[in-house]
Amino acid sequence: MPNSASARKRLRQDQARRLRNRSAKASVRTQLKKLRKAIEAGEVETSEKEFITATKRLDQAAAKGLIHANAAARYKSRLSKAIKGIKTAS
Image: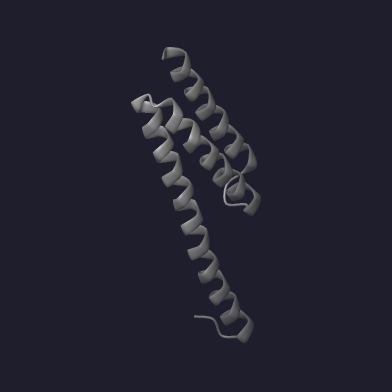
């Protein structure tokens, strides 16, 4: 346990940040799961709509440092490629 006042404050701040970060990461994962499900089902319109939301969430997470900027770009690129694939297959 922390002994000094500053260490106690740091513990409180870390706990609050941890909860906030976990919530934000979970929302990103949920959005990606929705998008992947739409892609697997071959729903072009739904997947395009979900892609816009997923892109926004990924960019926000990258801006806050929750995920690396290159990781966000990689996710977006691969998902965009998958959507283009189901467009051409349709």
